[in-house]
Length: 180
Image (cartoon, rainbow, N blue to C red):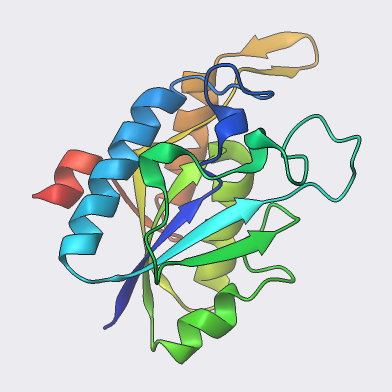
């Protein structure tokens, strides 16, 4: 099996002072950095997914803004591929699938944001395309949400999506477990 790391939307707008600050993004970013360092040492293929809004009036990830840039914690090195996307699914209308095929990748390690949106959609798409997925749960973050007037805390949103993805879509583990 050939494995690759896919870092999804770890961009400035999701961090403090960004336009869409996520709960726990600093810690998730630090964990993503640890995963990235391990994968670099192992010389794995690394793919940075960068979401860019199609609508210039979108609330975040505005093209050519500071917020759309990949965060310093996980800045790509030369040779690491940046895949630009415009939808939650990292495979939809992107070059990701072609890059994975060209590199003979059949196993993905995935982390990033948001747990309930782009991570969920990307992991399910990867599974449907036949990839074996490992999802690093504490290197992902999300937001507090509202459903019919009920506030759902980010920790519960995150836990719900991680539990839903844990079978059959991905092997869901922590940074510590992955780095052992």
